[in-house]
Length: 441
Image 1 (cartoon, rainbow, N blue to C red):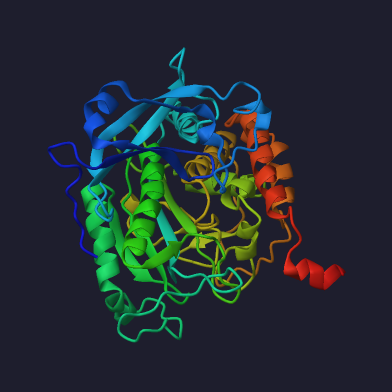
Image 2 (cartoon, rainbow, N blue to C red):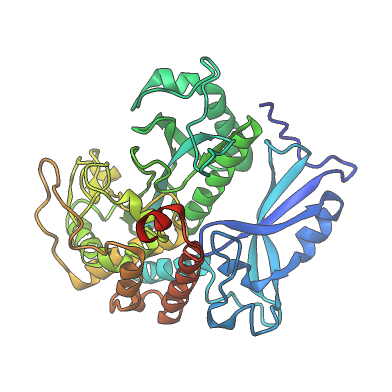
């Protein structure tokens, strides 16, 4: 793939993709002509306010009647930051993120996931705690053509004309086989100001992980995770392949996760996760106590729960430990200055904003309550998931009934999120599948 990186030409040729981030973690917006660039930057644009509530289908299940019984009013959408190039686009294109506000009052929508996260961050800031956050995303590079049954297959290697035959975890030779793909992701990320770091091959066939650099703005870190997913898909499709962040696209292969690294610093930048009066253990305890109640944010759809299986490199309990990848909450090795928690539960398909909001809420609750965690695990955690919700409906029920969570995220939003997820779930099972016929005919 040749990255054009040019953006719209001086004559106003080309397009601008303007989009907002919804509660599903996906992007929805409009493609504007580049000749309207100045108007877009000055005045923004109008866009349906219910776009923030679209599910994976791009459909609003109309919880609370928003978009369904209110006349579907427009929001005022303003550009956040700068326009950046879309290097993989077929025609000169730039893009921008939008902030949707009430058209009459200018207020942020209470169901905007970016606002949900910012409100939680504000709670920590009020207590002198400033989160530093980084996300890691796993994904599969897949063939563009779907299987006859609608499924997907790993993408072919250019060298062999066939997919890799075996898992090659941390394989530099496999990274080299896909070097052009990874290089194009890095170039596109740099062009868009998305700070990617390490790229590795993962346990699954044609599975990769890309790390984002840590930063002091959790909302921006979540924005960057969403934008990285767009970059990866765009670059993959430009080369004739595709990419999926589906939590479990292959039954016999490991699922794809979103690992979130979090530390807390004070106003002077001192890491409060280490040293005297360290907040590490109460923060871990908060994550342990709230894990079952926040699982719906980490595994937000029916498919997400397929990833949560024993012996598939996924934590199945509330365990924690030092330098131990079998636990839910890992404390990586490193200096006191770099001390942090790696939250390893969420799937790659989850909303980064809601995931980070739930993590920070749990950590803050543990710190405020001075809770103490269980002893750290040494060796392999043998959790079987029996203490956690086993399916989406159970997870949504635990979420809406959480006494702790509603102190950070409005109960109204928790109920809306449940309704949204159930609308998608019911649509998924609207028609009988082939397996259903096999079972019940």
